[in-house]
Image (tube, rainbow, N blue to C red):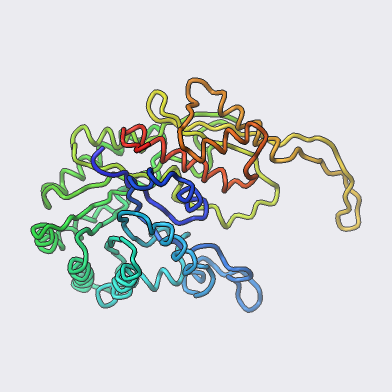
Length: 406
């Protein structure tokens, strides 16, 4: 693998927990792409004067609904010991908020964004900028290009690394941006600057990597033809929004498709760099209120026979009944086994799946699974076990590519 492992970090609590618990030596060889997102909704926020929930469109134009400032501050603080990282804003509408919309405004050459980036660098963070492409609805082509060029010019005067990230499966016209910036990119690189193009595939369903790889290889050839040997990162995730989208209810295994995608592209373009989401799906579920409980599940990322993710999941058992009163009427309700009982059970199953289960040295996530199998369940929260999976995923990717420092 050429240079560091690029990790898209979408700033959810589970991701921050995984990063904090990742061994510091491993953190040192990972280059995060920090995508600032909205944070959690504030208590009692997001409603109109009558108490009715705001629509998605209204949420994006109402300030103070989400804890954006607190989220970006804690996320960037977590990156303080990084050698360097890219800073970006979310492109996912469900992860945005009014503050992000304002920060990404294109007026005056994306002035608010460039000022934000420079201000964070003054605070001692070793960040590098990502170009935003977010024109106003009434911008004509000349204004679109002018603002983009002004943003690049501002960053090129203060940084030696600049990134441009594109949703490569959705944006068929992104080469227009790069061609518009070609004179600036050439001058920047001639002066020793490094320009990164991050081809973000977002979610790639397991089994579909080859189709994406063929298209992406063609895209990279077009980029090289126009801009020369700029630095290209192939970024993707294959972890589904729900495991039952790709597997069975209780147990299954699927390929880590982003690895396969990268390796297929590398067959024709040997200089590309690897990036993924740390096994996180692009769509976050943090606003879904779980009223009926959840099925305890633990995932494990394995290096056996390539890279695979497998999981075990259990429906909670009925261990008794009790009478409850609902609106004045007595009803019989099932009593379910404690979550911890099932987390211990699925942890035991994860460790018992030979030859896929492998002990991961110096891994907090692996230690959490071992502890749970022994009856010391660290948490019953699904978020905790997402962190466990992510920390193991990062560790296993580094081992797979032979760049694990431990």
